[in-house]
Structure formats: C-alpha cells, structure tokens
Image 1 (cartoon, rainbow, N blue to C red):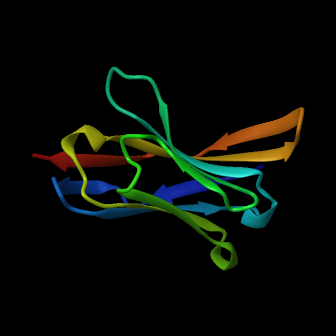
Image 2 (image 1 turned 45 degrees about the vertical axis):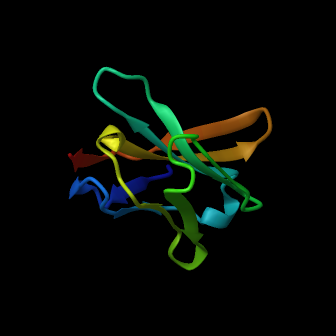
Length: 119
C-alpha cells in the first residue's frame, strides 16, 4: 500500500510563500507521475502541477510562474513551492501519485493540507 503524507500548509498573507511537502512510502523514481491537486470549498478538485517520471513538468495556467514542483529522490519527497500567493489559492492541497504501466495504473492520494491566503 502506497502512503503519501503532506505537510507544510498554513495561513499566509497575500504575496507570501509556502512550501508543501509530500513524503511517499515508495521510491519516487518508480512513480509514473507525481501531482499536486487542490480543492476549494464548493469547487471541483483541480490539477495544479505535475512532474512525470522523466521529470517533465506542467502547471495550471493560474499558478504558472508562481508555483514550482520538485522532487528529492533521496528523501522520496515531492515539493510544491508556492510564491506570490493570492487569496484565490486558498484550498486543500492534495498530493497524488500515479504508479503502474499503461492500462494498469493506480492512483494514490494523501490526506490533504490546508492552505489559506488572507488578503
């Protein structure tokens, strides 16, 4: 069973920064993709940032240039550095890992960490 444990959320003023961490119970190098999602109250969960096995990255338009996803293989941890935070970034942030081969993939989720940005 794959476990993902997020940390680093909190309350920050607009313009501030936070770094989220997601520690995995498996080798990150074996994961097809590591993703950060977020869900604001009353809204659907949305994909914020992705890093694939070959280390290519992609970002949701509204966070591109402000958020950076990175991985520390030695610690089996994925990070989301969030700069220039805005009140609209307020949400529960979830770490997600996709593991397996094409056609037979499993998706695993962390418990989520709250990020609140005050104006």
